[in-house]
Image: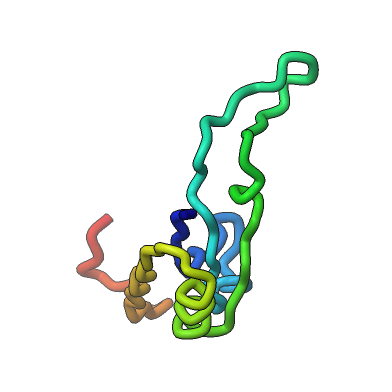
Amino acid sequence: MAQARILRPAKSAMSSGKAGTRRWILEFESASKRTPEPLMGWISAADTLNQVRLKFPTLEAAEAFAIKQGLSYSVEQPHDTKITAKSYADNFRFDRIR
């Protein structure tokens, strides 16, 4: 039986946008060790399930799919983003710590 994990990806560190973070992803855990291919040096594995990433609009849809397929799965909840209120005028305050 394949082990799967359901998660919502974090936003990219390369941009400030949140594109691609609203969908839930079901991906399979690697069942075999990854090894470098001797001729080209590419990384390969014996199982092909580690290449599969399924996207779902909701967590419930991803869980329903895993249950229907008989997969054992774990859910990784996303971290909450903490938004701090900032003001441009605070840069020029007299009592600002430099």
